Amino acid sequence: MKVFLLPLFMFLFLVLESVAVELIPQTWWLSNLYYIPHWTLILAALMVVFYDQEHSYVGLLNGIVFAFIIDLAYTNVLGVYLLGYGIALYLIHVLKRFFHRNMLVMLLFIVIALVSADFIIYGLYLVIGQISLDLNDYLLSRLIPTVMINILFLLLIYPIFAKRFSKWKQEIENMK
Amino acid sequence: MPSFLRKRKLIVFLTCIILIVTLIGYSLRSDVSTSLPSQFALDTIGFFQNIIHTPVNGFIEVFDNVGEMRDVYQQNQILKEELQDYKTLAYEVNELQRENEELREISQVESSISDYQSINATVIARSPERWFEQVTINRGKRHGVEPNMAVITPEGMVGKVTSSSQLTSTVQLLSGFGVENQVSAIVDDDDSIFGLVEDYDEQEQQLIFRELTNEEEIEEGQAVVTSGLGGVFPRGLMIGEITSVEVDSYGLTTIAYVEPAADLHDVNHVIVVDRDIHSTEIDGEEEGS
Image (cartoon, rainbow over all chains, first blue to last red; front, side, top):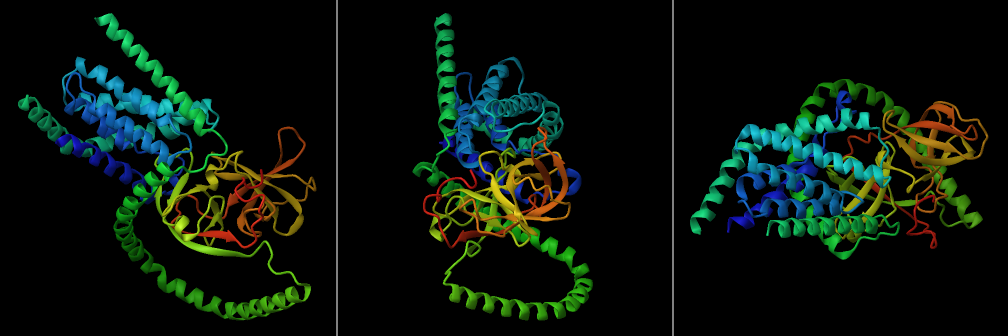
């Protein structure tokens, strides 16, 4: 039954994301940097690595559903986050077979996921003409701060969720 | 078996790509109105955003208030002095208003495009992805907020409502304005200078005002306000102040960089503006386009 708790956590982070952005003060020396919280992506990635078995897709599905909700609620264009998060999470799903599951590997996964997701989102918006931003400016003012702030977030929630998810996974395996 | 699996994955992948392209194409239509399911999703999310936002914001405001305490005495002194001026000013304004009403009665003009009703709202969330610069406010259709209404703070205009559900609405900030939502504007001192606020320069963090009348009389420091001729916004909402004037890349028109009057990074309490005169044909269409 723990499966039904996962979307609840996702929803919580989805809401927190937007409220946090509104409340983070924008001081003048940070106003040129944009840090975009991808907290739902991080939580979904933790699910993929620690909760999912070899052939289950709970994390991926959660990520995709909530990516669609982000599209619906926070942006003008549907499907962009869907693709970005989908591909990023699938990458992790493929990669996780080759690594042990620990903190450092998780960091690596998150960096890969963040860069690929954010870059896909940027690329798609650029292609359909919603934005016009130089690649260099994008890298400096958006991608790097975004990755930094999200790594910080991962370090915060890793201790809370990693163990919990592995425990739930154990419970499922024991039931069989 | 493996080859079959691989083939199945390929098919799933291709179907996904096709679906997503369709979705993007669908949502890029210009006449997207908020559908019932998405209204429901927005309301649900808005409800929880409200729940979380209220206590956290209260907490933060306490800290801000403590910080402000130190300046209060000084401010108080200055304000007392200014208050004297305001009294005379208020008297004058009253007088002028009465005179204005009388004159309108005489000329039988009932209401002008500068009149509006205001709806107070609080920003409860900001779109976490910062490409579109949208915020969510806690007033919706139930409170009379409709798409395309202007949104202001006491300092000046901050944006317009793009979509509204029953209890919340989404506001597009000026910093995310593009070709789809231009604002028809005039320079405050001079009615003959007419133009469009048509873009936002991310590097300079300033709005771009294109002058259409070719008078070439705009100067730095002049105020740019809405003209009310786009059909949705009332006349005379402050947009910002001109900081520099240039000739555009074709050498045909002048463009001016406008510093937004309102602080677009820190928007908390806003006023949604409902114009008194609705122009029936233009209602529902984009401002100025």
